[in-house]
Length: 473
Length: 71
Image (cartoon, rainbow over all chains, first blue to last red; front, side, top):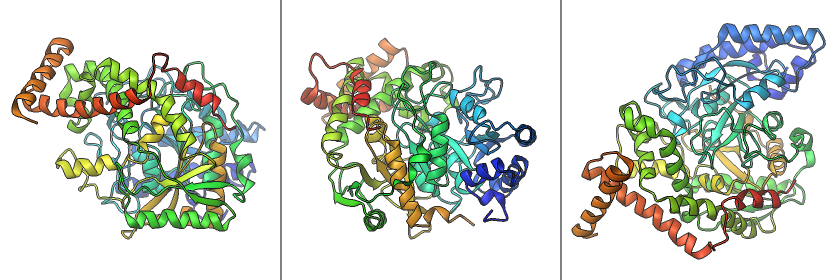
């Protein structure tokens, strides 16, 4: 291994070392637990750590391997997940106070798949209350803090997923993404996050934010790690009728095609919902230049006006969230954070016709995007978060409020939410650091079910850069 | 927006909240919600007017994703 501390290795290296008998799952698990002891007080990424249970699982995985049984490509690898994936018989808070002691009646399909692949579960991770919020604030369980600078936000709503992977507490984590909630924490914490095509990964047994826009996906340290994890969790699920029956590729096996000859559209939006800060623009331009040096044909593309698409997404989220939260909003509204409750309330006032039209518009939006920005290119490259990472205090809508704070918070999702409406895959990859030393992430966006293309580009980029190998001190 | 128009919007919102949803809000919050909903509704209504026809089906989204699949 390259590192004395096993926790600093990446997921695929650890999985392959366990499979090859060079290390044990117990050793990897103990390394992660030691790292959790070091970093949890600083970043508050975990809501629950399953120390003894994880070690028992690891011992069982080692015993299985010694007996000649390898469950799958993640055998013995310790992970933890956003606290919204149900594990039958165990508490699942959804980051809320309302479900503070709620016990899940079923296990999420994605957890079953990870179990079948041999994953060791270290615990469950902090998140925005009911996956509502792009910053990582949580008034009930404590704000999650960025491992690179604990005064700054992690991005959300998969805050603990981003922070735990970024701080090398776990090798991989599940997040979920309704408006950017995988890609934002991935970008903010310097890790890789994939929001795959809508229908690629089952949502069954996961807390919903918006059934129409929710995407389940992995956060990891490298693109290769991410590809391996997505290959395990993707696929049709009878318990989620929106999942596709398309076969799942072996994404990891498709990584090494390189980018020579690929066409990449560079989009640096200068107006719209999320004005681009120059230093972020410079980092994305540098990433495009790096891909160009690897042989990609980079051209400039113009994104369509996302305003209607963004508003349509808001209509879907608010209406669906209001419907599912209605009983609690009527009986115990005080148990929500104000900013979480108030963001849903408009859903009670939006006419059903507008909601249905928002759904009907989606196919038009997809056709328009594919025939404009994506016409003639294999992927579009753009920023994930359009401005340098703000502090927790600057973005605390619960205590500060005011139009400027609300505008900044809303700006987080200006370049991510549109791809939830479109349902197309989007990968966030680290591509630099801002002047405060906080990570910058780029997004690669592709055609429906073309996750393999995004991984291929991201992997080539990581082969030529070292942003993903840097870690917070 | 003039005061009469705002009052009308608040009354409409109050009617929806109390009469249709069974939820009570004060006038300040109703005014905020009315303004928020107006922006969202306008955006969707305009986009719909430019694009939608009688035959548009929400399920077309899943179809277009499958048809446009690259791999």
